[in-house]
Length: 544
Image (cartoon, rainbow, N blue to C red):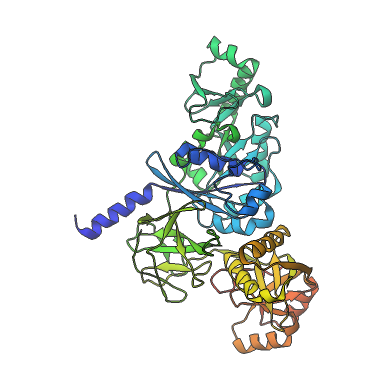
């Protein structure tokens, strides 16, 4: 076998071992706790943290930012890698709160599957619905985990019906609950035809007993009580009247396997992880402006889907998160940024367990690696060994909330400028610099983003700010095929114009009617509610 052929064989074999997925949910559904238990189950960590234990010494591995530990919420996505059953698991935890949905949307462009967590007591919540819509738009396969069965909640049949009616997906249960709340006895494993018996308070891998599924076994009925017979009857009803699982339908995001359990008790987690390994797809081809890039190709390519500043506060660092799209990454290899043409050093590339890092020697398509970034790498950049490519699809949404940032101490101008530049690159906030000068305008999807940015500016950069009202209700990026016409528009509307962190001009409107009027007066100018992180406005975006 020739060396190129052997290399291609190795790449194909390693790509087939990758499973890259994000965990998504409404806030407080138990997503971050489930992340911890999945890592525990996969052997990546030895003691699982909890987002609820705010006074405890351990916090969730994925919640590494100080404000996350204080508030008990996730405000930034995090990346973790572990090996399980011969597969390399790349797990991305995402913020559940809608104010940080942009970060979640970007993460969903970097994964091949999603694990949806639903609170068994609340069912489908608004943020869950929005995230599912993003997954459906990209045909991302979804595995569903109904959490908190150790608490009183909604009947399993009602939850299945809601998943199908609200999300428009066929729900195929792989496990079925026996009781709930105080009477929660465990789950029926419908595929393996066995019972997994729940023991409250156990947080170990062997914390559940396994018995053979036999409805005539008196020991099962005696141990689990009347809920056991009811669960068997419901499971049989679902088996007869429900939809049979078809992997092709699952891969097309038209079916979702459903699992029941309790993440806080590490119950039902193993079944979910097994399903992701067995059912979730290996990395596939990814869209590029010129062609489709297959993961098994020999040449390395990757796309930057996230930039995080100050993961190590002692070093004021910035890390670019890169999804490997094709080929093999080797430490020290020469790669370049297709946007700038500049070569990027790769000797210090890292793999992640949240904030913890290890130098990575090699990586394959589907893996997430981190590259130290000194301001030369932006969101949406494509990295290759030389071929000019541009991966597409990383969204940048027009903000809906606006504030002006005023320094408490005017002498900290340099720190404020550096902080806003880095947080803008990271995507934590959108920063607009008015053409006419004055205080920068901050744009966000939700108001909680302002609070987080103010906290981070003060504690990470030493620049304490006041958040003042900004008389804007909408922003639209503008573009034009004729640069002269674009300059005429910018000059004529200078009092409403600003440049974002990428240097793209934006029209800031005090009333939505101003956008409509500007469109009528300047028909050659395109107004965009969405742009890609490529320095280019998204042509298909429609004004709102």
